[in-house]
Image (cartoon, rainbow, N blue to C red; front, side, top):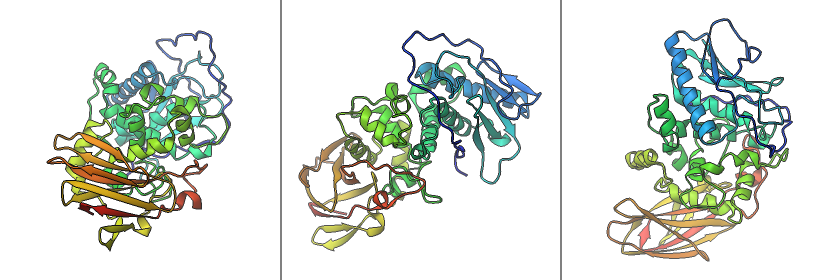
Length: 425
């Protein structure tokens, strides 16, 4: 079963404009119930920001309310994301504030643990959660991630952001469960930390796919969220990125432009291009060096399982990328190298723009990065160091693409060859 189920995007335009510059009213300690959002009911339990209907027991109701209050405290109180108590229809951010409704339901269909509904009149979201998943933060906080995306308004009715909603929601869930960002909020509401949701077999094994691919059955849009973890942890200190700036992926999005989130990230990080950022992200994923301690530990446990069969040997240290695994738009090949000496040189020949990097991991776990410049690079290896070559398809132009309907430009793979000296694949 996939973690968290696709939100059904409702196709109406958000009416919001830029946040006002005047001082905003503080939200009340207790939000107002709104019985018009969702099916309603007579059996319910409240917390300051949420109301749960028809829970099978008080214990279950208390559990989901504590989890969601903890997530609210982390992302909205702590990180300044727009409150889910505010309508995505309204132009101001100073109320009224309404509780979010959560419904305990018996069934939502095959393989569906939960979903996020919205009410177009009020501009508020509500959650439907199957009974057995009411106490599972990876499900409930995933859906809360959808609700926060709705509350931020500017991706609503923007089809090219559609698949990214799932990417954001799983990023929110994993951040809540694992990250120090939410540690204080977890402690405040007695929420345990947990292991990462990262699916490295998919992220690394299928790294050649379009960076966010919504293709039915084969896509990666539920698994692509480590890119957002990299953006928020920002280990390379790019201006305009980091968790404090994350809400700008919505707030600086060009209104009704139907651009992709890559376009707004490119604007946020200017003058650094998104191609550079994506290139370094994939280089760091060679050893999962993205500031996520639990994911890095997972990599160490699972690294022998990943599919790295990206190249065919042409003999004499020459290799060519397999046709089926050519990196698509902003996708990558991660290629572990087997050193035969104390230095490695590599030459890359490609048919289109690319970003390539040698990632060199020391015996103490630290990683250094050497960019391929003018198609070549050479490194010296210290005792105990290992290296990987990472090749990323980074066209000079950003494509306006819908992840649910990939076009030929984003599906086109990068054909390239490499020449290695001092190492083999």
